[in-house]
Image (cartoon, rainbow, N blue to C red; front, top):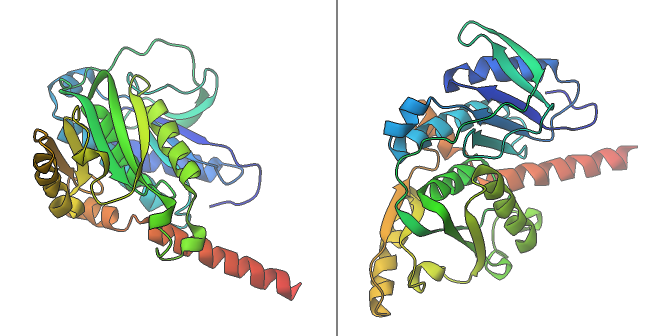
Length: 294
């Protein structure tokens, strides 16, 4: 990727996740400087989303994140965002957005985004007034965004998403802790992403001081969304709730990246905050050595 020039977001719009690699390749090749972020806006067919399950929609998002992550593997710190038009906040009017002139065999071009009306996205029925998710959410990567997206999709209109965010005090022994983002920065990243992905969802971020957090104590909570890697601990939540006289909640487990095949699942496994911190640490060391040789 090119490193010169003033960083600015690179924006793409597609109606088919399969065209993203070609669209992204053209956009990166034409970009005069390294992008500050990559924002993808998906227009999913109304007929498909109205009958699709949340798993199917999550797979659409997951495949988009796989394509983005593969194309930007040399810059793991680059913010990657996938939004759903009709649900998420659209691009700013007249901002340049890469699109295909004619889907399928069309030509990738950067065109101004006009103020055309985007109809509300027809999603599967929302079941939960209050949904919870938890984690460190350090250096928010594609896996984090996928998890937050799935949680937001579970929430009823004007419902509440409660995010248990691991407190700084519990992260001191993490690998490459010097590159760990402070609580305030991680909270702002979570709030900012959900606000754009699902503007109608109310987000409440609370410090996570133990393995269970508000999921074990919040009486109004209805579902916990978590990754399959945390299945054992997630299922203990209902045991903890029972000890407190609270009713059981639903447990919605998803892969790190909701994938449709083995290749996508493998890419999901490579997403890691630790890997990003290691990359940042290495970059810092190289910069320090470069300064000493001048």
